[in-house]
Image 1 (cartoon, rainbow, N blue to C red):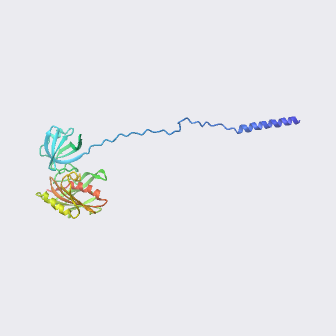
Image 2 (image 1 turned 120 degrees about the horizontal axis):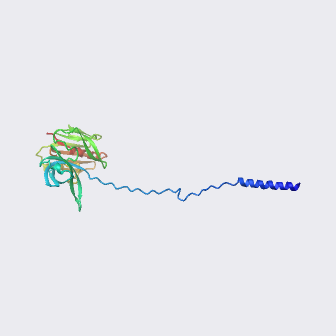
Image 3 (image 1 turned 90 degrees about the horizontal axis):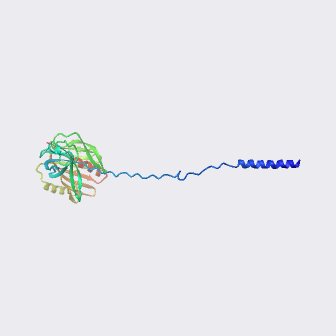
Length: 301
């Protein structure tokens, strides 16, 4: 009887051990990941094509002097003759013009290979007008000098290093008119165009008689600016680009203000403009607005 009990105990022990072994065994999980499956994929950088600079379109007005050859015409701007190469399709337009016609036109400049200082002027658009303001690089081509002008006009300006188009409103002073932008106002009784936020920034306009003497005006301007500092006469390259109709540009820089004495002339008449630019944040914006406005000056008939 004892042997039977002993055998039963041994058998139960073996069964228990096997059962415990089976419970403690866990199925193995296959954690093998294919090589590179979870690796981040490296994207090839996209190469963007370099932007192609579009030639700057410039505008002007002047007197058509005729064709020098089948591909070249001459236009007088600010009393100086300029040669222009004809763009595509302009030969038929040119055929309808006569010498002495006042014209408005668009053109761009092309560098001359081998000469960094030379520019070839390419005419892209031209049309006859009744009259035009010489060298006006802004405004519409159908303005009539000294006649009716549109109440508003769109202009392109450089503001904070960027070109922007803004609309200006026609304002009339004593014997003249010009386009004035929203940040400024014309005070006809003072013949001043001033910045609205600070009227210490302003330009004072005086209409000149037809028989003015430029040398005498230069002497007057030098005396007028002498109290500010050393007076400089700016050459054409240093004159603000918007002021293509300036005949004389004097400037004096002081510690607190820059003053300018400008003589402007176009087919409608001539003007003295005294510009006051205090040192301050509005200076750059004021210069861009005022020079563009002054270029639109026209004398009334």
